[in-house]
Length: 326
Ligand SMILES: Nc1ncnc2c1ncn2[C@@H]1O[C@H](COP(=O)(O)OP(=O)(O)OP(=O)(O)O)[C@@H](O)[C@H]1O
Image (cartoon, rainbow, N blue to C red; front, side):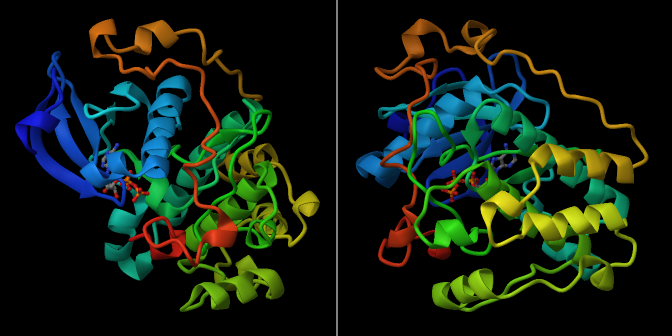
């Protein structure tokens, strides 16, 4: 990284990832704590909607506080010194290591645990009135002891404020393919795809092009999950199949799925009690001198210009989700 992009207060050790938007470093902060430091590419800062998307990710990652949502420690949403310091997950994202596993699958109980954690994160976001819009293996980070956290809040928005519909074609719901608004039910659909993928080792729908995937999501039905993996408890299989209902209102809530997954793990699902995300905002803030014009604590704005409009997905070059490396 050139000197002018150095982030004050952090020592950079090595690059651990490179996405469309940012370069991710393993770094240590002033207290010698390891963090994943996301620094937007210069091009991201030059393209308005890309910069907005990064800024949205910074603001919301700092705002939400849940054990299964990637935690932001500090950041700056906009400007040449924009960055996000977040919890570092040494195993990386699910997509980083799944392909190396036998049959591309986590052991069954580990998969259930990861899914229960992601579903708990979604239950929380939906309870806050937010829609994630990008649930997929690339955005699920896993700890050494097999616990998961949902990250990449760049496309997340609050339904009360509105936001631009977006998604990734392997995970996108029929209504998003139709160019309609996304909702918590669209997240549940993407979660249904993830459940299939983790419990059967394969995504339910395939296609080599955006159009082929669209046809599959709009017209086909997945094979019964228990036929692909007889270990899957019937209730989980039933709800996962319902999560892939073509009509949004036929899908279960994330919370219903969370309860089924926890029961499958032999646990008694409890109601989740949430901390007010505003409560510790000041504690999570950067020192004032490091705050940009749009500091990380500013109320979250909808990522209007930031997300990938589904109907434009084919046309957009950089922001076409189908072309994203993931
Ligand atoms: N908190 C983290 N802990 C460990 N590794 C991480 C973390 N965040 C990101 N990475 C690594 O960096 C890679 C790139 O991160 P990410 O996909 O978030 O980049 P991005 O440019 O913001 O995303 P996009 O391509 O969706 O725009 C990830 O695939 C992962 O390997």
